[in-house]
Amino acid sequence: MKDRQFWTVTAGLALVFIVYWFLGHPIFKTDRIVMFFAVVLMIGTLIYYIRMAERGDQIFLRTIPGLKAIEEAVGRSTEMGKEVLYVPGIMDMDQVETVAGVIILGYVARMTSRYETPLNVPVSRSIVMKAARESCKESYLLEGRPDLFHEDMVHYLTDDQFAYAAGVNGIMNREKPAACLYMGKFYAESLILAETGNSIGAIQIAGTASPAQIPFFVTACDYTLIGEEFFAASAYLSQKPELIGGVKGQDMLKVVIISAIILATIFRFLHELGWVGWNVLDFLTIQ
Image (tube, rainbow, N blue to C red; front, side, top):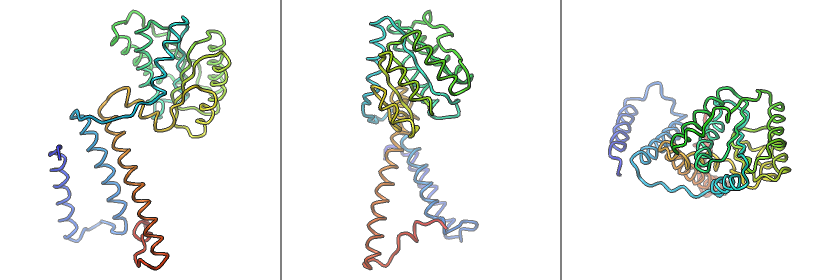
């Protein structure tokens, strides 16, 4: 009950809905009331935990091994005097995975500026190039090393999927980076990139939410951020309240959904045995 404003607004909206309901609830489809309360619950949970993060309350996010390995990879590149290759996927900024990849790029850029390690970021979209450049520039400024930043460290190759993969492979074979990081949206080029990086002996860390590409990265890379870990990583690194609160809110919603599935299964089983007359499917089914 720490957030009195939230609970006051929630109570006020609930009172308004109760009054509206007893007045006959015009234009409200009663057969979709379950969906209505589900949407309200989801929105309310996300808003509550985002506000909690913005107030400065401590929200625990477990350590992700792949993130700790990034510093190890950058350190290895520094020791060997070689560059870090960062591939932010092949899609544009309208994909949430690309946004998460650019956020993680900022974290990597801060480490490369701290250790004075060369950073190479080939991109396949012009808007991604602009966003990645701004992210790197901000990171170098925060570390007090703007002199090490140059715009060519983030450069455009091509929009074509396999031409981009061929271009990145060429960079790998010519420059022999000590660390290859793949963070973003990938398709069929994922295994091509990861196998090439493996062949040059680079330490490889990948992160994506594309289910079809995760097995290839797990096979060919040293560390892989799988699905939700990838999005949690961007929140963990940026420490932005809206991202951290969003992750916590989603986790709580998962607990609620899993609990609802278990309870619905139990009630359905009891209904089939004839012990309970109420059919939970009639309640949950959207008409």
